[in-house]
Figure (cartoon, rainbow, N blue to C red):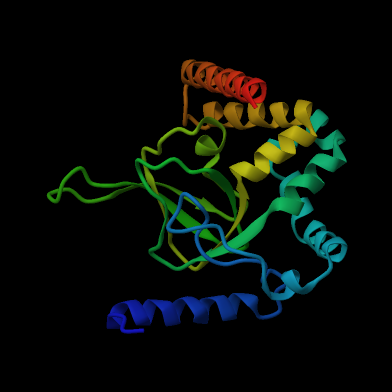
Length: 237
């Protein structure tokens, strides 16, 4: 491949970081940017990809279940009472790696996934400059266990900020397709989890209650339209 020198350097740096993170780790289950970031969702591989499905899920439960249960989104009594919900989320998580300076989420995009920042990770929420005379403004630093992309996951809303990696960081990703599959399996708990996500956005000042209500109405209309269209297609088949 005839790549520019700087791009070759970053590719080598990426694999060096991945090798370093994977030393003694069981998380070789996928690399690259998830859909909505800089590329398509990675395929399974590495150590976890070599295991049988049952053993792979058991290992992932050991690695991720406590992280989820410790997160405020999963601390509702009804959510915690549904052991299968946590297992369903863990089963569908995949891990991706970003280098320092990588843009994980970009302003103006919709992020069809939600990610949990992995061990030792730090990312910056950045307001990009409006023109070349301005500088980007860091609004917040997020750390291990924090969540990114949840607004786009449930509302398909366009982002107003960038999210950039400050260090080499793992992000444990739940895609919208996976989330929809979970909601189909656990409808009541899935709706409750969506409500918890919306409430957390309000508590953190990311959205107002009026904004949540407005987006919820739009989402309900889209779902009703899809159901109606699906019904029309079935009748015409």
